[in-house]
Length: 134
Image 1 (tube, rainbow, N blue to C red):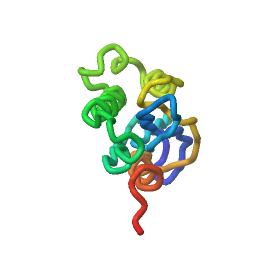
Image 2 (image 1 turned 90 degrees about the horizontal axis):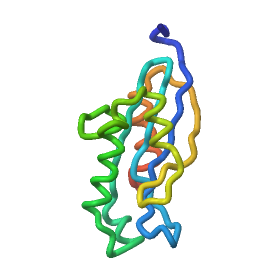
Image 3 (image 1 turned 60 degrees about the vertical axis):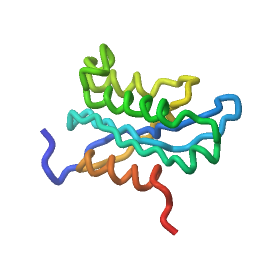
Image 4 (image 1 turned 135 degrees about the vertical axis):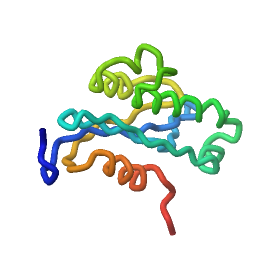
């Protein structure tokens, strides 16, 4: 077990909303964080409706919100996630970060070091997803 002051490798990916796949325009709407050493898999999601509708005024925000929540449910092993939610943490992270051509697309997987993967998920949400404060 890692000591409280030690830092462990973690992996993360951004969840992107691509409301019109043919256009390729994306909106960051969540982060996935996986830290094998600390047995952690977590997610944070935030759908900015104003930015979504700037990309596609006809986007179905409710359906997109459900898709983001489904990814969060797989992370949390929610019973609603079905078989994917019962997989091992690493398998769930790999499944969630596998490339797909749907409205919710994972970005590339990046790595870092952290002493607190839960706090890292919050930090990455602020840094990569939430609107920039002016």
